[in-house]
Image (cartoon, rainbow, N blue to C red):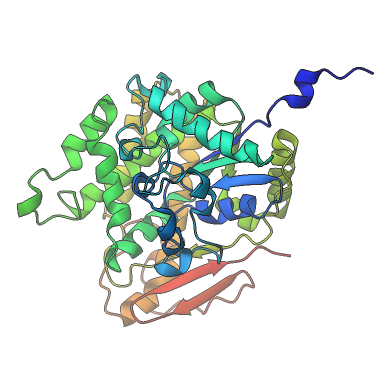
Length: 393
């Protein structure tokens, strides 16, 4: 048997994990980080990398803010070989975070020369350590196709139930951290070269920032919701057509067979034996603050129709079916959230009426029974609580 030298010296193909914010992406990254044969980068387009100095790496860690992230070493340790003494990762600039989230040529466009050089630098460091490069990011969904075409490897799209994700954005916002709501504004404002984002920005963003009485960078709470749904449906449906592997975090937590299938698919594609058995669902709360518009179902369907038209997606196609599932799952989770939290919201003074026409949510004159199903933990804190579901053994 003869083995070519080229086969022996061929570099290990990279793994790219594309996701959005508050989707359990940090937990997923830590599963790669634990492996002895991978070099897993967290948030490769994070704007902080433009100025991060080696002596400050230790400051960026899960316990430095209300992250709900798993306990792990500081996020950016893997970047130390790339950090300049004066600060900043080699070949990275802050404009890569949001301004080039969608390539100049749209979803079918190419990465810039600067982006290619930066990614090559990341891959070279990992390979110099004889590790498989794993690049993860929450700012890369719009360039998922460009990265795949430019670098190959195994492309993963990770997502979470949209209602759970939206609650996490709101929980952070109401808790004093507007960053995640603001990322929606950054995405729209800095990608107006994309016609769909340009129209969504015109409809939702507040331009008169200094005189604003809206919600974050948006004209109203409803506009912020429309931006969240519109941005994510657009990016998610495109990603579903580009990714070699789609990972539903909620299903990982609920379905053991799906979890094993996901691990096996990744092993076959990358040679990495990931252990995802510690997956958990956690659902944040807005307390007594608003969590959805009153006409949410109509807004969701309207957003899906707009995205389908923009991307020329046909009903019944793989992407069309995926979009319908995203909407269906959102609606179902909001219904359950309203059912399970009506009592605590009433006790806290909530007056929000159900925005979904669901018979289980109509007033019955009695309170629902406590939840004791073996899958759920209910935590009550002052004004805030989390609902956790656990996989069945």
